[in-house]
Image (cartoon, rainbow, N blue to C red; front, side, top):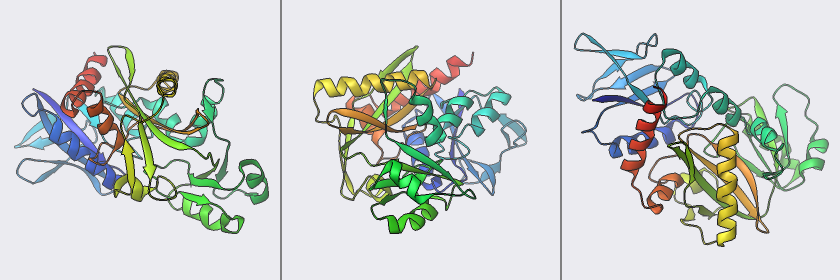
Length: 327
């Protein structure tokens, strides 16, 4: 039986969302087909949860653990870590060295997409992908408020460059609040992005690859009860998510085609979710999520079900594809 490590946690504020995602994966993968283990990665150590509610420490030399005096190794890793070290390429590099297949994007794609600024800079070279204007600011460097605001305008978004789950984001509407918004973004990061505000409707587009074919899932429109799609809207029910989105076939096709192109150009694998703001039927790419949320509140699971599949079949496909691609 294939032994699967469902890794979750991480070293960022997103670890609680990761835990929710991992539990959904565990509940939906077929335990008659796979030997499933939750592996918690945290600053305090790496531990595998055993069936008797005890834990065993992971040996980082080969990602193994001891059970009844015998060393146990994993055949494959289901990566459910949002943020570092799961989404930024660090774990990908570690598993590559150990030759353990995993379900998420590789080192280069993960490190590129984890930086909103660098990823959008890469995608700007393609004329068929619209990107909002943004400016990168680094902690410790001189930051010119007037220059930044003259380029991105007000209102604008201020967000951590290397974060997710809407932690640290501020919608800046008053120049007097510039410093507080910047400091908020830099609480858990060394870089902040000032991003042009696009006034439009927000959409999430799930994408996955199977048998060398990139497929776009049904699109979700996110209607937030708050001023934007913040943490409360994402995970505490303060939003209305419509899947499939009530948009024209032409706009649906445009967003899905753009998502497939982005997935291919970034050399992603497994699954991803690409977010857009649509203004006057023009989609502006906001960010690429290589390990999208998989909790019960998350968007991509809704899209999988709307496509006519099930989470059980979808997760099994990801595991088997990752295993096959490594052979």
